[in-house]
Image (cartoon, rainbow over all chains, first blue to last red; front, side, top):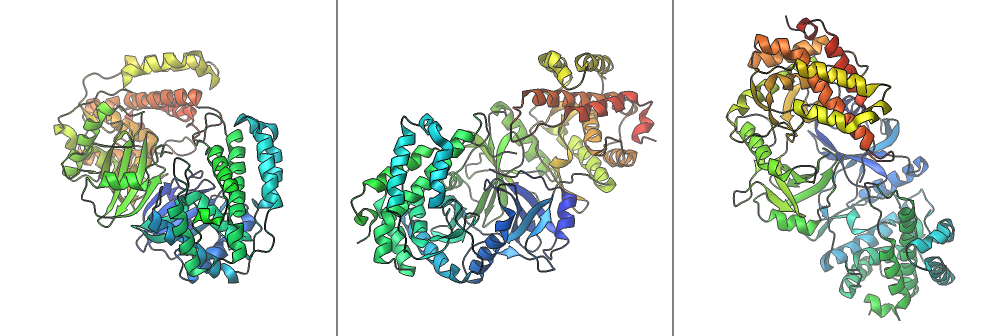
Length: 320
Length: 320
């Protein structure tokens, strides 16, 4: 839930005078994303998204995010295309915040994606990985494996507020993940947050991949782990092998995984579950009880983590 | 800032199957209104607004609001037109909440409306009053004059938290307003909340009047007072006579005010200022300090109230 900054009509008109986007027909703050303020802008030419970057986003990362989107869109991927002002600039300023305008993508996100959507997602994820290979800029993964121990330390004993003995249990599982973490797998630009709410569909056709604000350089197959976790577990916590198989087949149809990558899927998926468990745990403990936005349940990801550490082999994910 | 209820893709598809609105192209929660959850729905046919009524709205009032909008739209006014489902029903249910779909109106609201916009607003307000005369249903003004003393009592001594001696000062001013309150002026359906954020323009053309959820039966000229307060005071608290004159001329071009109505404008405007002062004061004292939405400053309306009680005659509003 967002829109932290209000943009009035005069400020908007002044700002848009630097662009060639036609006349404004409507303008509304939309409740998408938690890091930024987003507006749906409709002009006589087209629909656009105007994003104002709030304090939680590091302004130094913005040129990287713009390049990722510009680059992927130029390769034909359905992702938001940053729109340049008349002077060629993409990152501009409005209400004292950095901001950018993007092409609008049709489609709606799917809360419980079916098998066809999982396959389409796998395919798009592989295309993203391949298309991103020649991006010049880079960004380290601020929430990668090296961040997990400090994150758990910062929570400390308060981890036990969510479940008895959680501090010790999480430490044990983190130790086993980090000791098994693969070192020599193919790396590249990953999305790192490709949850179902960041993918748009019309029917089962994938029409958009959005929200690149966690994109970074990391192990490519780690991104597959993130998607297995967010796309293939049902609301009751059960793992849907049919969806997992569809997602993996979609991915492999575009970018076949090596044997080493496949063998690492359980630990990569467990690591991804640890990452979201820890950030959710942190948010859970740091959100005021009466906040409008209720934090997501960390225990959902604890259960996912336990699943990955309990599987006996990659057959559990639908690999043949 | 709104969107309290999340509508997922499956629930939306199931819900829309009762309508003939074409296929969904996009669907986004928008940050408009504070009482309800609003979504912008774009289909292959048109743009719509889907509104879910949250607990703050009394469900018993909804048929009245639907009738006001349906009736005004049928008279050619630019207000949201409730869209019926295939079975003819307008009020339906989604996510366990009453809801309705409306036609989407182009335009953007104006934070600091100029003279032309004030004139257009006055004209539309008068059209609303005339067009609403043959509405069958009725709704008492829950925030009318009889509610002000109980509202001030409920705040009690805490009024002094906003300014020294405010409880006594507000009581004195309320006494003088209520003792001078006019009894025999023309009554009818009023909008009761026609602030600039509820009126849409393209250029200086008024393209929409929205948010009828305070509409009720009351003194027609009281609605003029509400608009004078919300449209004609500048950000620095000064009263803009040019805008007031434009607003009043726009109104009188459609519905001339009687001498009794004109004479009552100062007390009606003061009463309107008292109403918004009191509700803002209440919200100010009841909003948690760390809430995402900061309450509006009651003192803005205290200053407006003092202005109206200080004027020497209706010439101050631009009446000839």
